Image (cartoon, rainbow, N blue to C red):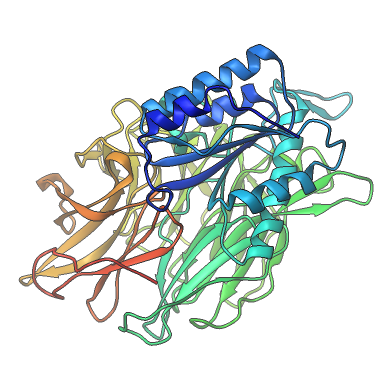
Amino acid sequence: MARRTDGDSVRKAQAGGAARDDLQSVAVIAATPRDAALLVSAEVAGAEISVICVGEGGKEDRAVLDRALDDAVRRGCRAGGSPVFLRGEGGDCREALVRELRELRPRWVRLTDPDPERATYDPETGIPVHDEPPRLAAAALDALAAARTHQLESGVPVFVDCRRAAADEKLGAASASRYPRTANWLTEGFDGRLSAFLPSAAGVVRWFQPEAGRPEWQGPELLPGPRLMPGLSVVRDLHGFVHLLALRRTARKDGGDDVEIVHAAQYGTGRPLTPWHSLGSPNPGDRYKSREVGFPAAGFDRAGNFFVFVRNFGHSVSYRRQAPDGVWTTPWQHLRGQRVADDLVAVTTPQGEVELLARTRESGAVVRWYRSGPDGDWTEDRNVPFSPRPGSMAAGPEPGTVLFRDLLTNEPGIWWPGAPAPVPLGGSEGEGPLGGAPGVEVDGWAYTLLVRGGPGGMGVVGAYAEGRPDQGVWWNEAGASSPLTAAALRARTGMVTLASLTAGAQLAIAHRESRTGGFEFGSWYTA
């Protein structure tokens, strides 16, 4: 193992000696210094960055990393010591990584993509061809396993972001994520108690209220789920039960891994999660094709049918349906049409039908699939009039709406089927998806609440007259900064709750001071 010292004292002096507790403790783990530099370049102000490289690389590689760290300090980051190089560790890289993570104790880990997207495909051999060297994926898998071990040992959540090496960093780190940032992760159960779910290195972590309407929370607790990848979709059904979707890695008998879609449910706030049920893969039995599956999106229709959509190896969409009685009525079926990227969003319309929107692979536009009735065939609509920033689409708070950030301006917008154009919402700072909650009463009028990330990760709350975003949105800072998009929820009692995650990875909660008056929120407290 080797540690670098040159340049470290300069970076610490430039950082201004910020206290560690006030910063987001980030460990960047990559195959080489040059690979690490790409991850470092995406960090924003407020992060304390520690770098671990599996290989030492050449002199120029290390110089590239030094320059990236210096640039990060000038942006307002802090260098958490000298880069560490695990040379001489042989094939047992994971144990060395665990030792480093024990010393650093990071709450956030940045990795490259463990299952990179192919550049081409050789039909004769059946093997995808990649532009990037295999070492990037191997290092990411070793680092993910080490982060999982460290979390299980320490009992403290470790949040992981796997970033595509070829992504355009000008669009922000959220656009480069292999697994989408979880949106709408705060939910209300049928008993009125709230739960919060987020993915971590070792699986899903949960916080929940022991008693409805009270400020006390329990958590974080790790829910069972071996070898889940660090992404999560959270969907609530018609009865108030919470459904979770993720990707799980399983070892193959002939070597390598399969990646499959899995589903679990919470049938009571604070109760144990059901076992994770495998939905398989649109490309089963192929060790190469299954690894490139996209991340699932899902929704319930008015009859209680559960639809799960995913991008398959051919970059089209596949889906499965679960009937209201819990029986999966279809294998994976193919929706023919436009080739799509990883961004899929399922919405439920005011008529109670599930629709899918996906960002296209070639143009960055959006394509929509819908059905003309419960038993109708799926129809493709290529006339959706907006282009979103990658990683920014999310289901809107009002039925059938979708929120996004404009590809060119980064300004948030909202659109719904039938609207001739999206409605701009103002406020182009920040990155990542938006969230919100409908039906917020103010002086007898109904408003829709929005929440998004602002400058430096500061949470920003906005509101517009329900159903009329074209009348304008009033934005105000929420008073809490977070590496993740905050979540908003209006309970059946009328109480509005904001949830955020601090730089130290603690759940932070704020409530609206009045259930019928203004949009002032009380002080934030950690759960």
